[in-house]
Image (cartoon, rainbow, N blue to C red; front, side, top):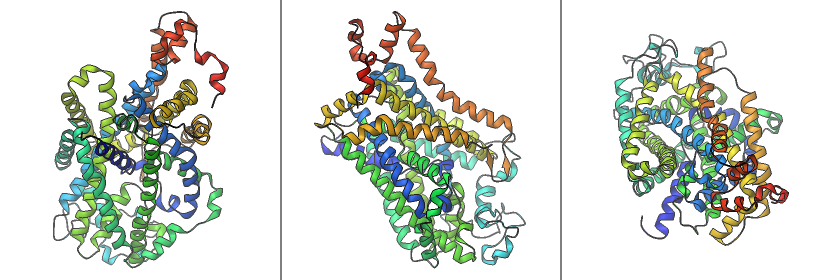
Length: 562
């Protein structure tokens, strides 16, 4: 690392870009429902009362203790299972997230042509029913079908038939073999990640200057061009329109809560891992405010780029904006490429767009893998001594398991993992993290740690959020995510019951680590029941106080202090 400010700037850029990630598909809420003016009200509210406090807490936790997601729990040993849970979740996400990056790379390679391959119906993968978009009009849809759900356009068929080969699979029970084209793209992605991480933050800190800054440049270019398109004004107007009646709907508030949580990226161990490399006296309070604000402002500005394209597409096909609005992969790999194909200089815009997706994805995946590698290497010194070999093992392991996601039916596996691997489980893990820090370790002691680093204590507002508001917010989202669960589907395909059970098994495999480690820790400590409990919830550097009978957590004042 270069001395002084250079190191801090690299870490700040890495944390900032980790928040601005290309989010997992299931977390992309329906654009027309969520990204409206009314949505901004609960979104900003939850950012202030929960998003920023949790972000600040993780940065301070990692910076003070200089440890990864698992070993940071020397502050309350019984909660170490929370660290293992978030590491396992980050590993699960890596299994399928790299596949999304591989799709972006495949699209990038496919864009280097005079005519983009998703512009017409004259390709080998097209079906006989493929509809030329130039001949398309609203009457083609019929039966109230939205344009976003119409799967016979060249762009939709290129994605589902040309890239995924989904038509060759009957469901999750019929996966087939990995597609060799996607396998090569996935291999390239994993190789890039390995060489970006093999020397730790020394290499990732340099790579991130490219992966963090380039998307901002591309986003600005796309935004400027998007707002000049016909119909863009209607799209932007739909984006900013405030319908206060929607605030009465519970789904708007639930969507805002989950969106702010996932967009900030708290709970994946990444913020703790990155912050552990900061200088001890770094102002992480400033970093928390700055990076979370940058994230949300970027999301807001991105809405203009997205809705200008939605307005343009609605204008071109003479349909309503809500009919073209879609979510997740449909937006990124169908609607946006289709819109780009209609622009003059479409090849240039396609290359620019998919370079942006590629850099966003690689940067975000670097963060997740860094959390896994740092978290386990800090806990097991053998892995730390052989970091390069361990990094190779993690990279190669994610490559092998990701092969299931690039088969003919791989999108079903990806959807399953995306829904269950980092859904309720990550919410539960962060809830336990907030309880462990705020209640068992203590907000007052945590505030003293921050004072040692920066020379001032957090204000009353932050302490109240950490102890009451944020845990209540997380508990609310956890309960709602369970209550609102519906059997898994992908378009018209409904997943069988056994697939949903496997999904819940994946979710529980990480959550179970929290109570399992509590039992393990309690059973492996010697002494009476009270002494065991005391050793489990007392910071490791204060275990001598347990022998003296001076256990802070056994006093009422500990639980009442803010």
